[in-house]
Each structure stands twice: as C-alpha cells, then as structure tokens.
Amino acid sequence: MSRKYDAAGGGVVDGGGAETADDGMRRRGFLKVAAAATVAGALDPRRLVAEGVAEAGSSRTVGPLAAQTAQASQEEVIPLRNGEPPALQFQAYPGGTGALLEKYWRAGLNPFERTPIEIEPWQGTVPTSEEDIAFLPVHRLAALVRERHVSPTELYDIYMERMKRYDPILLCAVTILEGRGREEAEQAESEIRAGEWRGPLHGIPWGVKDLFSTVGARTTWGSAAFQTQMIEEDAEVVRRLNAAGAVLIAKLATGEFARGDRWYRGRTLNPWNLAWGSSGSSAGPGSATAAGCVAFSIGTETRGSIVSPSRRNGLSALRPTFGRVSRYGGMVLSWSMDKTGPMCRTIEDCALVFNEIHGADEKDPASITMPFRFERGPDLGSLSIGYMENAPRSFIEKLEELGGRPQLMRDLPAQSASSLGAESASAFDFHVAPNGELPPVPEGLSESERRDFTRFRGGRDGLAIDYVHAQRRRHIVMNRMSDAMDGFDMFATGSGEVGLTNETGHPAAVVQYGFGPLGPEGEEAEQPLTTTLIGDLFADDKILSVAHAFQAATDWHTRHPALD
Image 1 (cartoon, one colour):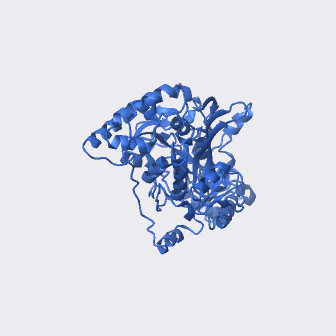
Image 2 (cartoon, rainbow, N blue to C red; image 1 turned 120 degrees about the vertical axis):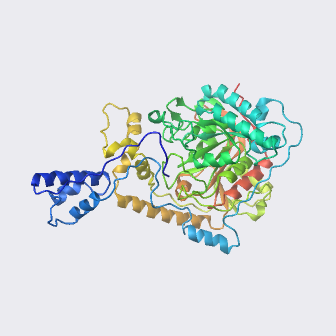
Image 3 (tube, rainbow, N blue to C red; image 1 turned 45 degrees about the horizontal axis):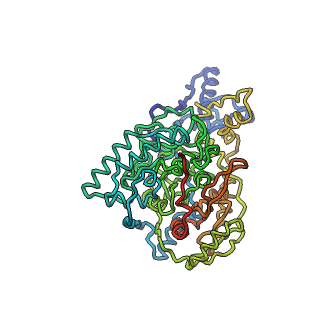
C-alpha cells in the first residue's frame, strides 16, 4: 500500500564501518553496523552481550552473529510509514484463495461475475420537504435523480446545509468538502442532463471516514498529531465511488487512530440522544448518516468499528467478508483484520454501495473478487438460517412468517488470542519510535493518558515466534468456525460476535428490528433496535437479501431522529 505523503516520513540510514588496520576503527565500524542492523530488525542487541562479539571488518570468522551483521550492512534499510503491507497476506477462506476459486468453478459459478442491481422507478408524489428528501434511502433518491424529479445540485444543497447545521452539535465531520462536493454535483447534473446516467449512486452525496486519503483534503486519522496531514491521493474506495458518480461532501470523524468516538475536536455524538456518544471508531459515519447529513457513508472495522456505531445509531450496515473491498489509501490498524464497508439507512442501500466498491485491487494484496448477487425477494425457505439464543425473538418470528425455517445454531468456537497488538505496533512504529528509538513513558500521566501513550508500544515486546504461533492458532479457530457454519448460510445473533468473526473474516449485516430505549443506564433514548446477521464466508449477498426481505415487511428502518 505504498502512498504519497506531503512530507518525507522518518527513516534510518544504513551505516557500515570501513575496514582498517586500526582496532579502534574496527570497533567503531562494528558498532555502526550493529546499530543499523538493530534498527532494521536484523539483530537483537541482547545477543551482543550474550555472544561476546567485539570485532567487525576482521578477516577472522567470529560466528553466525558476525555473518548476520555483515549481511545486514549490505542490505538497504527501507523506511516505513503506516501503509506498506507485509509480504504475507491473510485470507479468510481456510483452504486458501486457489481452493476457493476452484470451489466456485466446480459449482459452475463464475467467481468474477458482477451483477448490476436495477432500481425501481419512483411511484407516487415527489416529496417537497427538504428533511423528507434528506432521509430518503439511496435507492429512492436514485429514482428521483434518474427521473429528474430532483437534481444532484439540489441534493448537494440539502445535505450540505444539514452538514453545516448539525456538525457543530454532533462533531461528525473533520473536513466539509464544499468545493469538491459542488464540483462533483455539477458534473453529475451535466452528465444526467446529457442522458449519461452512470447508475444508482450517480449524484448521491456521501461521506467517508477520515482514515481514507482524498486529494486536496486533510487525512487526520482522528489524531491531533496528524491534523495537518495531506495525502494527495484518493483512496481506492473513494476512486470507485467517484467513478460511480457519487458526490463526496465530507471527511467524517473517527476516534483517534480508529478507537472509540473521541478525537481531537471532542466526542462525536449520537443524533438520537446528544448526551450519548456515537460509538466507534466509525463514529462520524454512524452519526452523520443517522442525522441525514449524508445519504450514506463508508466506515472501517477491525474489531467492531462498523457494527458497533451502526447499532448505536440505529443504522443498516455491512461489514464485508475480509478482503472483498480494497483498503488501499486507508490508515492501517491490522493488515489481517481491517475491513471497509457501507453504513446506510437501509439494507438495499448497503447492497447498492457494496456492488460499486467490492472487488480485487492490485494495491491491496489481500483483496479478492467474488460473485455478489443481491435479491430483493429471496426464497427464505431455501436458505439455512440459524440463530443464537440471544437473537431477538421478534426478528426470528418475522423470518418464520416470511417463509424461513430458522433453527438453533450449534455452538461457536472460542476465539484465540488476538495478534492485533503486533500488527498495530508495526503499522505505527514510525510514529511511536521515530528512527528506531522508543522514547520513555513520561512521568505523571493519568491511567487513560498512559494507556493512550503506550497503545502501540506493547507489540514491540513480543517475539516473532509468538506472533506466528498466534496465526497458527487462528487458523485452527477458522477451521472450527467452518465446521460450526457447515450447513448454515447465516445465523442471527443479539451480541454480534464481533471478536470471533473479525478474527475469522466472516461478514456481518446490521438490521433494525424494533424501536425502544437503548443506551447506557441513565442515558437511554428511544431509537431503532438492531440485530446482526453473520454470514458464511463470501455470503454477503445472502445476508443482505434476507435482511432486506425483513425490512420490506417492517418499517423500523424508516424512523429517524428529530434533531430540531
């Protein structure tokens, strides 16, 4: 994921001692070589003491450590920032990508098939209230735009006005993109007038989590330390949505370095209850979409950051199967767990957005293309739907009414110890240990300040063998999860199972099923209640189709907060 930054990142310079007859020169040369090798990760400085080596540049053979050091002196020490991927890539399918593609091929399916989703024409009276228009789902806005009842610039004006009005209250936006948004809206309007309608997202205003780079705007990662960072390149998900004609109007808030809902301006709030945070780390996408400040948004998840804010803000959302959407241009927290997905007000909208952004990207080596066939009217009886005992009973009963035959899910495996700390430490080593030097923890920090300061430092303390062991155990859990899912297309869960399923890479859809009080004690607010459908690997289309069938028979997803 090599990216262009506005300023050169911190790095190290390879060094080596020149060979001379002087013992002091040789000793100083050795120390310089050893320092470079240590920074490069090629040498454990503790071995210097253990093996008692004191010379370099000598013709005398002094053992494997000397050979290791001499080799390191000939290697380039390449500076790293946040995004460069490792050579080893995680794939969610336990048998590997080749076996997965062969499985689809033997079943007579084209794994590279892309199926367009047609939108239904507009029927009935066109709304005149700007608020009513702002809270329409994307597939209805698309019908209005395609049939020229509403223009892209009119939509831009509606959403931009709401963004400016409510962002000071919600703190949902990092950067409001007035100039870029206006330009894209005018371009969309011109194209549609000329009969060049690109598809359902053409002319639709949206926002992206501020982990993704965009040309001409800051990419802050929610951190004061990076609040002026400019990465002059559109992330791949931004590029694909731009190609679909969507109109980007805001970089939306994220908790600092993708954790929680607090960032350098404050806490992003829930529009259903302003005493309540939006949850995170896709806090801005959750808040802005629920408040009708954007028609849809893009979030990311490593361990719950799409599911949690979608549930907290009463949204529909898709956390895709790992690898289905490119993460190129996004801040890395974990190369083996980060995922990109849509956060919307309806499930059908999630399908429309996902259909534009999924697919392999050479810039993200872990990405993969697989079929996606969303169905508005699926045969629920032909699908094997499980449920956990904590799943909402009303949700399960409605699926039964619609022809489904839900059955109790078998026990799930326990998750293994996560290796997230090591990957995050590597991704942020350039920040916490510039030039390979780890500064001491300042004295007098509060517990929370110490936790934040040391967040990316702990991963430096582990051994490489421990990380490999963790990945091996993770693969065992993936196989156990495959056994648990055998015969099931999906299962409903009240808890979300975010820890386990983020480790295994399974997809999740968040869907509204009721309305009532939700929130921390003393801060409850009336809002949509949600549950989660976990799909088998690459069954993203099936869980969205079932969730849409539920929404087509209910109206919980149509409610929105009354901010004024």
